[in-house]
Image (cartoon, rainbow, N blue to C red; front, side, top):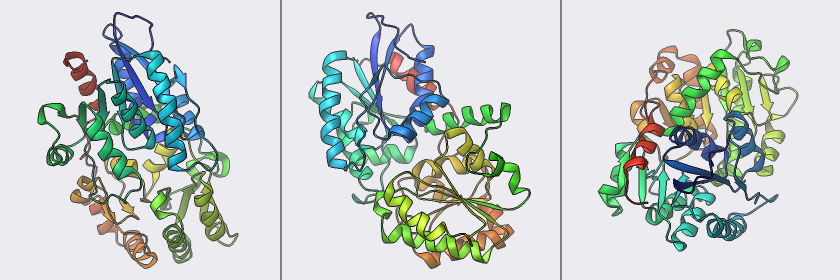
Length: 388
């Protein structure tokens, strides 16, 4: 699928993204823009900040980029990628001359796209605007990426009222902020319907089948945050190893991020043959991952998106971070912060695996982040706005 219908009389919207989370959360917006082909000429540009994981999602949603900058390099640093991205996006905007740039979230692609668009005096619409922890180094570098993007953007699509209030405190004009819900819930609902129609295989599991778990409990683990690299991630891995020994009847499933700084400690600490109830999987496509989330008893993660998705699935989440830009889930009781302290992770996970009432209290299906219609609201506003 490509959105570009080459009609110069339409408003040209460049949707620029480069990572798996961005592609998941922008896919519903792209689909909604496609339905409005009499209003918009939608042009998709990917930086490929994360090549393989981006391509997985593009296949799921049948999205074909109109421009692929292919910027990822092995072992890239934030500064190295940012310098390449700013120049490449600047060239792209010079060539394509869109009327609006649409970005999502808090990646290096986001801040480079918003800065390049500013240099071209092209208005920027920021999806998932206003998330804040208040700590510029947590998450790193995402917190400063989104703050910078907010002050370079023209339109702000805030998932929640709390996000709107964050923007107002920073001096963003109220008339430019629109509360829409989070598009990740739109994407989740699309995924759940596809899973219902055709349950996906899960690579890395015996026979690639979730049925191997039977009626046993499943703990899903993910971890990739840069600020947790080193001692933090090692502490998390030690906690998982202890839990696997304490609960041999529980399956611990960890799709391991491709970053070598994640792979090395995970394989060294959790890849031991005696830890038979730990399943280390390759990174999963979006649909198998959603199916695995849906099957899980609880989730241990440092992911932002999972904090949004899991409450909508009724799955408790323990977050091994000290700060979250998504406090709505914590406020409902569906999400709890543990930090990376080994003892704290073991304590909180053990409690949820042994105390059915405590687990049930966290496992309420709630939707603090939206109702699945965020993309419709965003595109509906873009149809009426006069900023481009």
